[in-house]
Each structure stands twice: as C-alpha cells, then as structure tokens.
Image 1 (tube, rainbow, N blue to C red):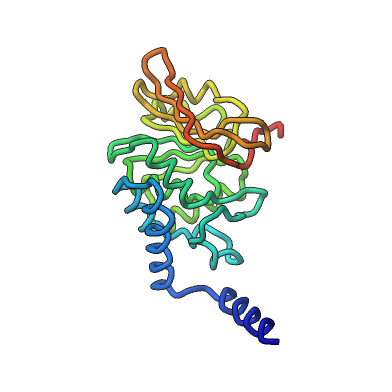
Image 2: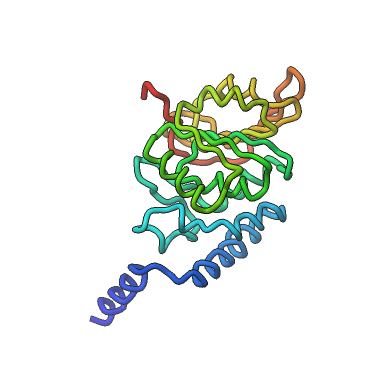
Length: 231
C-alpha cells in the first residue's frame, strides 16, 4: 500500500508543469551534472545551454522530463536529442559570433536556438512539415530573429545562403551528402552522424581544407534516420 501511495505521489508530482524558477534550477542542474562533469567546457556552449528553455521545445506530456539526460519524443517519429549530444555537437564546431551555420534537421528547433545564442545567423531545414512549422513558430515567439527555418529536403542544403562556416546534421545518414560538403567554406567544419540505416552510427567531424576533407570519428551514437522525400 505504501508503495502504491508513493508511486501515485510521484506520478502526480510530474503531471503538472514546473514554475519558471523551477525550470531555471533544472536547467542549471543539467549544465552542472550532465555537461560540466563530462567534457563540455566551452563557455559559449555552456551559456547557451543554460539560457535556452528546453521545456518550451518539447510537447506538454514530456515537459517534466525536458532536462533529463536523454532524448525525448517530439512527435512525427522524431526526437529531441539528449542535452549532452546537443552541447557536444555545438562545441565541436568551434563557433564564434560571426559564424554562419546551416542545420539540417530542425526538429523542435531547440538545437537551432542553442546555435542562435552563439552565432550571427542560423539557416535550418526540416523536411517534416508539421515539425518545421511548429519550430518556426516557437523560435519566432522566443525572439530568435537570427534563425531562419525552411521546410524541405536538407540533403541538398541551402545553396543560395552558402557558403557556411559550419554545418550540423541532426539525423543519421548512411553517407555524407556531397551537396553539403560543396556548401562548406574552406576551413569550415561539418558534424554529422554516419552509419548503417537504423544502426549504431559514428558522429563524424569533417573539416574542409581546400580540395581535401579531414575526417575524425568522435563517438558512437544513435540518431533517427535522415528523411528524404522518397522515404
């Protein structure tokens, strides 16, 4: 009986949204325990993760879990990445205020908001129309005027806005899309999960050096697959 009462109390406690100050504390705890204790050290990344309200970018039914150490469903068969992965990918690109960034796979818009806190301009593409529209609305509501959302096939990038200082792909691909490499500036970096369809992938960091592409495997990851129009 005691177990049932405790369980019911726990379920009730997570059924209601937190107050804004509670979300702030949860965000601080996320940064302190999930990021700083691992290998996230870059001040701009940590500041962005501390500022962006992750709970605004997830559906109501998972808001109580917004700052937990894992991915969450955002509907349409897609997820919002684990906070650590968001921070890791952001830090790996070594961005600065003048950076021009392309993101492929907007999802909820959370990663784009984190990037938008650091760089001059973010161009983000989402192929799943309901997600893209929702992300655009959320980003506009939060005042991210430097983030532009396009609904379409991210495989071909955004040529008219290129070249980019950095490209981030937030969906798993079986190979690196050639159009994205072409839209990367000389000296620019791209981070992308690459590997077998629905399997374990490698998070790969690519750096363009003239006609050469330097490749570095960062870690094993799981990501939802890269969606194409024919899928």
